[in-house]
Image (cartoon, rainbow, N blue to C red; front, top):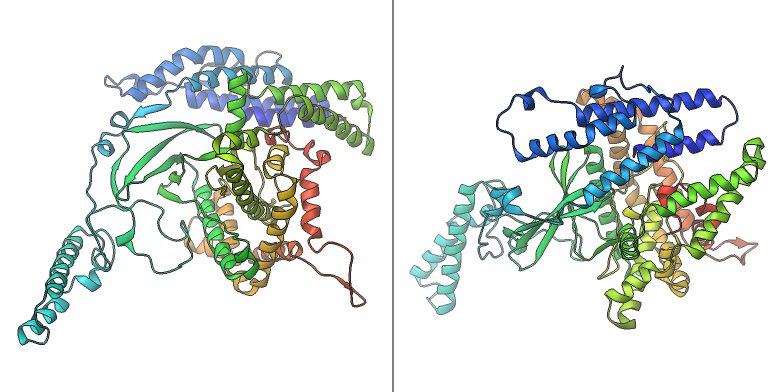
Length: 607
């Protein structure tokens, strides 16, 4: 993150004409202070650890890390001991180029260390309690998990009394019914003693697999949940898997359910605002999926959106459901780089250096005004086109799916489903101003084409209004080739317009829901910047933000309305423009090389 910020600042510094020395000193001071804080956080010596005789494994690894990297880190960036504010200032004449080159060197050095982390870890070493957990899910039937129905013996007593009075003569079926009722009563009594939910305890001693309730799961029934039919936790997998997600290493744990399936979840550290945003994203997907089931055209086109289960565990810890068939654009590209022996960021480095050399040849620093922007865009477009044509394969995802699926029929069905799912995801990106859709955040399921929405956060301006995107949605060359031109015209574009029309037709019903979602999101966004000290102040904040919420809801509904099929009439005659003209314009903007070449390098527009 520091390297990305430094590269952004140095690019902005190159494009300015005035106060070069002052701006360079300001950037150097900012980066130096950040490095000082990093040194303090990771290399300072804790007094408690220094005097402790019994250190755990983590403390030993921390000491080894400090001993291995501390001196070299402080020497490379001219930092004083302990990284204090006074000593963290630059002691040598380091330029911005020196900072960038050394940050890149340290990034590669630490990535090599991180890549040496074992892929699998024994669960018994990480958590003996979970490794030794074992449970046998009982046979449950309707009502056995509801103590209000089966905890009272009145029904059983009535049945026994009727049998004794001769109203219901004993038979094999009545004996079986009585035995079942007695068993249900025993289960309910045990459940009440366990105290694991419900008004009187509810459920049984068995633990349910997380993510089986609304809004983490949606289906065509929309009925009251039946806990007795939910999968129960039997045990945990014996190994943890270490995976790379968004430039971080996370652990994935597997839960074996009573239905024989293995449910896998990522254990992620996240700030509370991110977790609450993911919960609202699940709510949004759940509501839109219900609307799509009501729409005639959307139902005939088999359009749907599925939420991703996000379960908070602690204030900064959550579980996110993940399947083995999950694949991101970044993962596919990394596999290609590993197979060909290339560095993952080699294209980024080439693009930055080639653009700098090209601008220098064009005497960029001597230009001013619109001519300066035109020359910059021409230089980036030239380098971007060269990368797409000669350096990066535009069929990485398509080749991956050719290997993963059996035959052309399976591939066609996948591409058709993927195009419909991506249409909904792209529409949400545009309507809700979702940014930072980097390759690591473009994720889909290889089995059914479901497009997932990790870190699907709305973008706000400093005033709290939804901020427009640089691009309406991500449609880079690899994604475009995975869909194919025929499905891009015949499936993606109509699906996007159909979903927009379906939401627009239910605008009165969804208006209040959008207001709640956007209100909660902007309040959480503001409180994440400055924490509200009491409920009263939170309520005051909601009143202050009411006008901004109204404008954001109006913007969202206006964008849904603009994307729906629009039959314009001139003097009673239909116009010649396509009814999905807005969607086609958005698609053209998202795929235009002139727009993609101006995106930040972290976006990887050539993928």
